[in-house]
Length: 408
Ligand code: ASP
Ligand code: MG
Image (cartoon, rainbow, N blue to C red):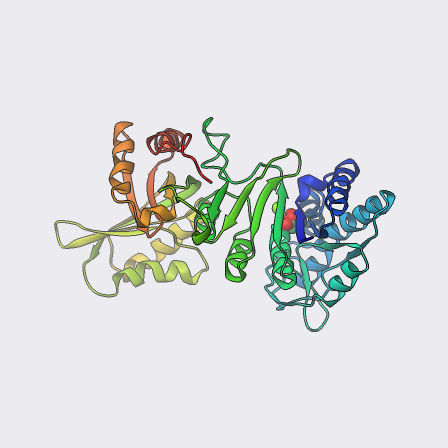
């Protein structure tokens, strides 16, 4: 017998019919003798609907009240699932985040979990009940309701699995698991049986949005065995593991990409200490996330500094830089909103040589110009013109034979 934490996302509980199907699924696990703790999201679209209601009343809703509002979505689904389980002859109890005491800090809308009290959950499991917990929410030490940021139910599930020392944390969603790349873009995209926490973090932050990044970090830190799988189709899904567990690691796990980026280039800055800070400083100080940064020495003793930001931040970044130009001094600032970032990710890069050159060769073969290159231990990213994105992803996917590679 084992203890499993299962999280069902919004599309898995989108209607009463869906909730009943989830109840059938949970019931089957109970029948096999597993203890089950279920974490639910709100019905698909519900959190957005609630947020829109708030917008109608107040342009910048009070963070405290916003969390009180948003946390209601999950309260609906947990109660309905418990009813559906009871109809199927299974004891079930629902709990809000506050009731099981998922203690968080007080940063509304992006609270961090500090502590989980498992006593109440364990007592219910002991009595043979399924425990159904509202995802995405917690409570401060003063009893205020908080939420964990969009997609936060994943983090709730992982935190509960860690606290309960569950045998597995299963994240049920509307895709079969983690793929070598987006299957909507590449026909040959293949489901990965295993991926390491590190790879998953890179894949998630690089655009493969199957799991909330914080949930992956949390799972890695507490070594929670995490599996992503489909609610609607049978299959083993993708197991996210420690590297040691992955046998025969292939060099590359997948190709991730990010479409909505923009590149800013500050031209003709003098090659003296402090310039990079003068360029990037004012941008980060306004809370804009700067991604890839490169500096090129030009022939005349001046440098160009290029960096990327989210496309939505591009205009604001441009304004900030234009204001800062007189003090830099720089000649001009250029903005390019038609770029995209493509990355190869894989822990096997550590032990396989020549990955970068193979990557560049594949892109060269398609005549794709690389604007910026950055690398880390387990990833190589290139910034290219957006119109070549699909071509680049396909070329890399086939150059590294990802459609064939046996993984797991
Ligand atoms: N319902 C919340 C959201 O839509 C939390 C979640 O689904 O994980 O972001
Ligand atoms: Mg979600």
